[in-house]
Image (tube, rainbow, N blue to C red; front, side):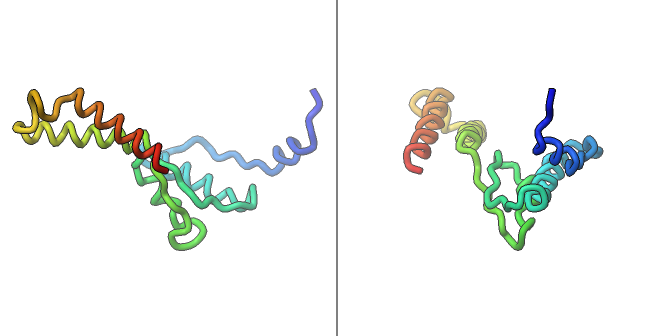
Amino acid sequence: MPRSIESETFAADHVCHSNFQGSALKMEAVGSTRIFQCSIVKRGLKYAHYYGDGDSKGFISVKDTYGKDSVTKYECIGHVQKRVGARLRKLKSKNKNLSGKGNLTDSFIDRLQNYYGIAVRSNV
């Protein structure tokens, strides 16, 4: 099968990083750093936004890649929506007077989560 010139050029310039050696906690941060640092050399571009899941380890490692606070963090609304429900459930378990009929039930928390997600998505 013939190869294009572009793929041969890429293959010659491509540098493979070895599989990650270290703790699983550092894997996201190291991977994000590698991607952001290679962006200028390989593509001639700078990433301005970091879309994450609320865990800031990856963002902290790249936020100053191109200068102080050069990358802005955005969070996925699905993850934010999930945290709303988790925090309401935690609040309900700590304050027993909030639970029970007519108060903060699990089905009501699910509805609040859904309405929150709809409201944010509808008002971007």
